[in-house]
Length: 358
Ligand code: PEP
Ligand code: MN
Image 1 (cartoon, rainbow, N blue to C red):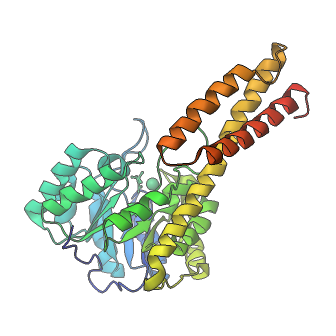
Image 2 (cartoon, protein in one colour):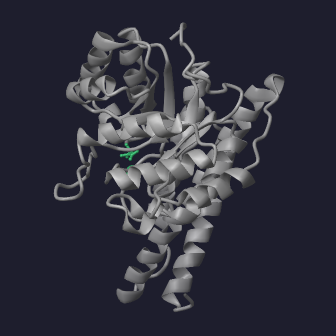
Image 3 (cartoon, rainbow, N blue to C red):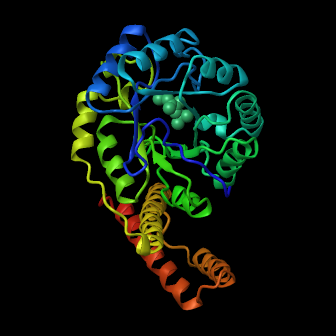
């Protein structure tokens, strides 16, 4: 993607973080206009609102549909903000573009679908290749699929491209609604130099109190901006109410975030260090998951009056893991000491369970 062009249209300042804010969904004319008025008052330049909502299960609020586009048009007229919405089909593209929407974004469920991406790319190309398009990461952590989605747009002649990192969905309960896995968008920036990547702390955290810390992390890792869900009355929001914040709170957060200047000459080093930090965090989480399973095993052994360690099994595990590590270029000694340390801690935790100490 050699010839990427700027997404900073109509007076947006490319030297400042791009901040997009607005409700998850357009719900009513009043809610849209009131939220927009407050956001514009706080200096926000790009207003978001979902018109067609991709809901995981049927029966939820699926968006107001086309009539909401009229409200976006009014937002533009009254506040001068640019407006953006999510498109997922040719019909959405046609309706959004004829209503004067300034930027489009592609949602995480859509960017995971090459057929949908091709349909959208062709639809945009048929009308206006000059519109900036931001592509959210696919729900699953597949960087090739994310790049593929961008590539389909690029190949259709749409060169004002950006990406949105909104985290990756996962099974089970976690601190985050969608896991950050920062090394993936960092790798995306490395693979597509010049592509602005902004962060969506709202969908990543899924909770209001995680918006500020995730937004700060995004700036610490030199991402190009933020897209944040903001609603004039979050508690009554029809979708994603737990993660929406008022424009006042948003304003407060934006004023307290520290934007760091990244020094060009050390940027690649910084990116690599950030990757290491992220991988180390994931290692700690993985260790913790392993210990959880060990404690469950401890519980089983306790109930069946078994001893904590069955030597045969451990020996087999060691041999196969060490061989695997060696094939990847790691030393036998290193792998043996890591596995021994993990095993010792697992046994310690099992014994605690067996002896009722936790
Ligand atoms: C949204 O931005 O409201 C949305 C549906 O996000 P995502 O595609 O990231 O789930
Ligand atoms: Mn949402």
